[in-house]
Figure 1 (cartoon, rainbow, N blue to C red):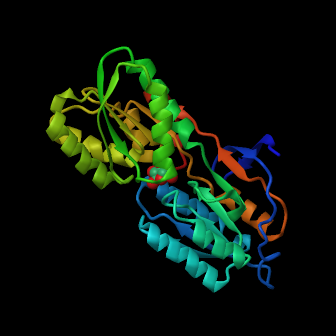
Figure 2: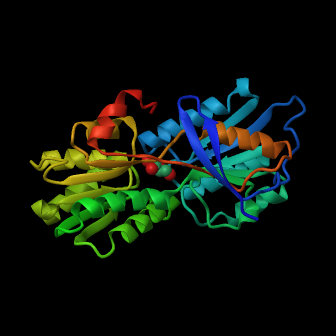
Figure 3: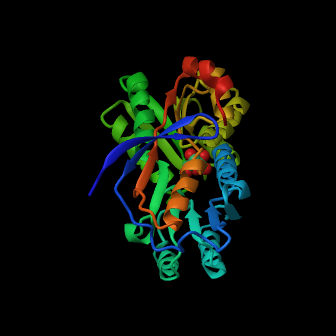
Length: 326
Ligand code: AHR
């Protein structure tokens, strides 16, 4: 059965709209957490690759605080899938009440998620998705990455699609749902336009790799490049340094479109060094904590909660920059 409804979740700063779909049982976890009422949660974070990730970690730590009734065991896997699987396995061995997982990559989760299920420990996904069967996790709280890519691609198609335009792409971590879905949404939106993809490579969502890969693009294609689509702000910011070092003007000689809308990205957009940003809201902590509490208490929850994202051009960025919480 599918049900669609909008829930307004009051985040610690600002309001977030969630679209919730489907219904799921509690996932068979320990009812009510430990005897003292404290819920022990193991959180397997991807790493600390970007400004978005820092804001997401902060939001999760605030929501899963002792004051809110949680004992949080935090692990950041430095973007190594095998280290993240080991962290989840260690949470199972420690007998936590629930596991929250922000999966680095989509594939490879079946075995460890089955182990969690066999141990009667519910798993709640946060941020990215997995390809494993839906029975193996209780709920997912995240973003519509395909729509983010589509929104970026639609803006690009409207602004550059009828003039021959050479584009390079900085992709996020290979195999992550954030990179795969953003690419497919973007590609479908620019289909049939005059935009040509000169090159597309991963920059692993980091500023440093974004810079290095852009340096390579500039060496190879020079001033042929008119447009950059970066799967996140940080890679765009790294590329911006490479573009300036090459004597070109970011936002003018090379138009830049990114995703995330973190403070540094929005600052670049306000200055005209970026041209368009699609938001990816990192403030998922409060909703995730609410879902975890329900699942541990054996209450039913929806199978997915999707955060609604906005998008900004330069003028819109200038207006909201000072009030942005991250
Ligand atoms: O999964 C969300 C993505 O992961 C963000 O866009 C990126 O900045 C982060 O590292």
